[in-house]
Length: 199
Ligand code: GDP
Image 1 (cartoon, helix red, strand yellow):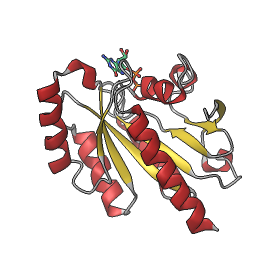
Image 2: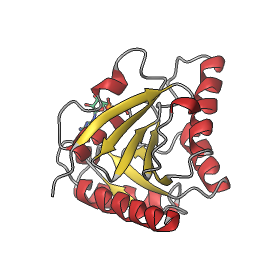
Image 3: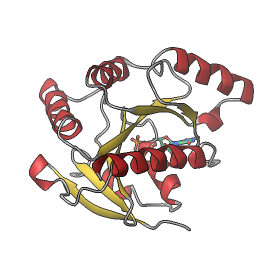
Image 4: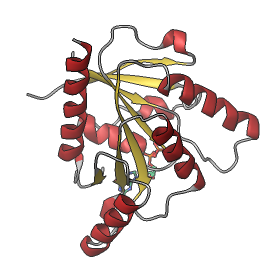
């Protein structure tokens, strides 16, 4: 059965996070990594995540509700070259206020561009996730831009590097849909586990 995914609201501070206790799956990655398009691909629609790219919403946590199952949570992208130190700190505060205070957080989806070496921001995020023992999968985005052999090589290199502690490393493309069913499986598995843990 196909789950309908709807925008459920944006939050600028923890007081605005949803309170219904559904499992949450957080999407994290540097700006331009392909987060919006991947969210659209997961939802099977063209412009679900458009809302998160509209001015004013890019610095917020955006919640998308998948039926009565779970929330997909879009955290702001980091590492945009021209942000000031103050903006960087405000990203860190907001992301940390979300990641460290959600008992319903079932999984983080950590996006890394399949073509590039992880950035300094990616390394910091990995250290943060590992330090706080938050469960995550690494998704190598825009995999369609690589040939098959190169895709395999990059995925293995991510699995041995930034993805060493990840539950899985998944090569995905919003253009071809590759990796999307696999990612849904990882999301549903984590949500089911989290529901069981909460019961
Ligand atoms: P965000 O800033 O992380 O939300 O990134 P976007 O989803 O807006 O994507 C950034 C750029 O990468 C846009 O030009 C997208 O069209 C492109 N892009 C995103 N995902 C893919 C993908 O799977 N394949 C290809 N070829 N391009 C992609």
